[in-house]
Image 1: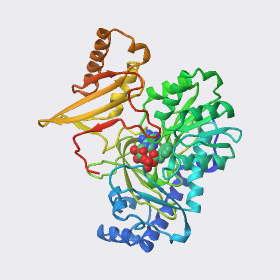
Image 2: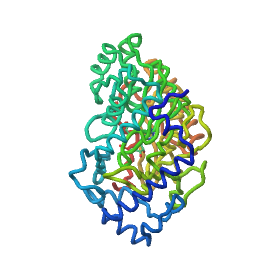
Image 3: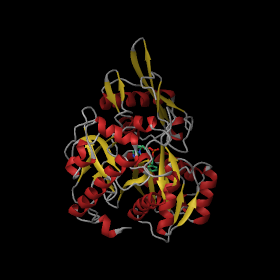
Length: 435
Ligand code: DLL
């Protein structure tokens, strides 16, 4: 399974990877110390200077950086290069609080596109493919990242952006798109729409690269079956460049992190202590190769597990599990920790599509959770008593999975608003967290 975009780097020895990281870390620490007053202040407050950082073992001496730092330093406070060297700005899709912006020099764009090209090749793409990019274009990094990666590879790039499903399907059939890049929820919606129009035989897709939001193995299975493709996960965040920080290979068993450009740590989100390989904790990245916007020890809030077990694809880069939740999107309901992905697993196991909404509320100091689930058209024509029995079954399964009682309401097919980007799955009316 030796398909690589940058073979000598993607299969480098661990020793070589550590050498790149050590050199990069020392350079980056000196750079931010000299160029970014905000960083220098943070390091001084933590009692650390560049002289203290001689190798990877010293990384833990550096203070963490969080989204709050990025918001505080907004817009230009963390820029490490003069404005005239920067060629691009992208931004997170956050809807609360101040937006987070990231800057790129031409080298930064090149490096990011290389990461995305690696993801495409790992999913089986070659320059003969038609890459259908249905991630949003604009400030969001999804469209720009995969678009750039596809160009870099030399594939035919279809810059669709998200939305206008009829046009997506028309281009997909007319132009013979072979690789689909979009969020998993939009892929599921496209699959549903293609089947409704009876056009599945006209689709020539062979693989999909889906990320930017959490999705389960069950959802992967459903999308693969519906579109007759292999579905690969891709991970990234704007602050660390965008999609392509990590990507799945043919083994579909975790995402390889591009360790020649990023150092990854897993920490205990409560104490900040660095955890050993195999432990579940929060991912922390150091983007030591970035020129305009290098971030040291950036806390992602994504909860993951890392593995250095040998991968059948031959890549030596460490693998991260699918994010198992976020340390900040985890819902605490009646004192119980609930991840939306657990609810999704129950629904998919029961034959529902991933069209659902979780509504959390608090009345008289007591939390409640309601799950709206879309019926399939077949179920919708069932007797009322059968529908009630289905709801009861879901209540029971959710109770076993979550340990708490959730109200389940089966709703009409297509009554939950479809997303063209990231699905809004949780409505937390309690407002416990202010953005
Ligand atoms: O979502 C970048 C991206 C675009 C990744 C396209 C993959 C494909 P942000 O908008 O900054 O960037 O959101 C970053 O999204 O911290 C995760 O919580 C979540 N996320 C990204 N990829 C995945 C994934 C883009 N594959 C935040 N699985 C991250 C689960 C993901 N969550």
